[in-house]
Length: 362
Image (cartoon, rainbow, N blue to C red; front, side, top):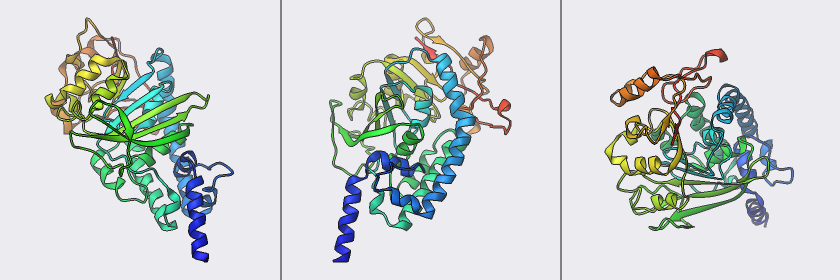
């Protein structure tokens, strides 16, 4: 009888634990005072997790996020309601820092979505392991400003809470958002989102795009929506799996591209490249995005910021002479934050600098 009563209690906790409380717990933040998850904050593993995240997010905020936000307020003064962030993985952190006022965020990556997290179904040891795994996954974006896809796909599957959802939860909570609703979805061939009762695993085939829809409110109470799709966006998949039609249904928007492995320099990704060029009112990108020579300067205004010294050795073949020329011939504004693959962060805040994207204004 005692074991049955315990199982019933756990089920009640699972039912009452909101997505927002779960996000705050995973982010190392206190759940609501009446949350059934509050008891889990008494565990030593969570307390160490919270202390770790409080420290690294404070440093990240001072070193990067606050500076990005200030730059965005000064330079991106007329944002669109929709933000397209292809090749993003779960990086809501920078999407929100650059474009905090978007009503709809559309993000995509090869990383699996995972199931909606339920920490009450995990043992104490599994929760501790999940906290450590999330910390390791976030160490890449904290240190370098981007996720490493191959490493991430391996770690996402090796935890009690799997997929990109736990990471997105953390970024939402740490960005001051309150989650209202979370639902797994899939796209049909016409780009219509439908409820998905599947596993939340990635869908690399051309026939499907699976993901999640998250409704949340900003600190000012304004409703916003995030879509993340686990899908390939090469020419075999982008149009075939309904993702292109879904994006087209949202109309024009702004676009963010960073640390995208120079994929849109390849003919294999011409469809998504053309979509972003043709459907975006503004594109904010580092040099791994749409090559500069694909923009007609009669239609687009190119504005460089920071400096451009070429790609890192791994992508040496993706050097853009036209981009070098743009930086040499333009009145380039400096930036005080780092972005892209070539990141060198000094301990002295005044020395923080790196290549930043040329925002492209049509």
